[in-house]
Length: 205
Image (tube, rainbow, N blue to C red):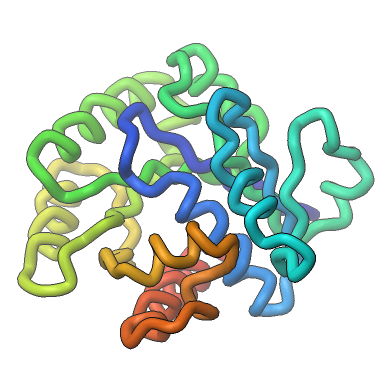
């Protein structure tokens, strides 16, 4: 049976689509049949990413909601949903009906963390949605302890945070420009960036 993971955020610039594309790639590398559905009709970052891949393509399909076939999703081990950017809160409640897990990427700056706390408070009030939600700390500075400190502070507040920190490396930006994955770009930190994603994928599935 498919495991459905939705990635959503009320704040832009936290790497929502970057996380979606890379998790799909990590699941696929691990031998899991994976489908990525881009529901962000206004921006369509995941779809654009796939288009930039050209003939080489990505190792997994990226679909619009209109392209989704129930049988195809049912046959997948993992279905990732790249949700609309800044979704309405009623839409967030509906996510719990479709997703087994809801991932909320967040940077570690004070403003980003405050926005994430506000969203999580809302989701926790919604009951089942909150119980399915995990914070993923992204764009974490590779040097220093900002990520670790943010993770432990959020946990002290009773929020569920993934253990893996997705650190900020130029390899992700290069991957987005080329329509590929961080592991496949020429960058001295590409392997380290990919290791973060693989670790997170194992934590989730």
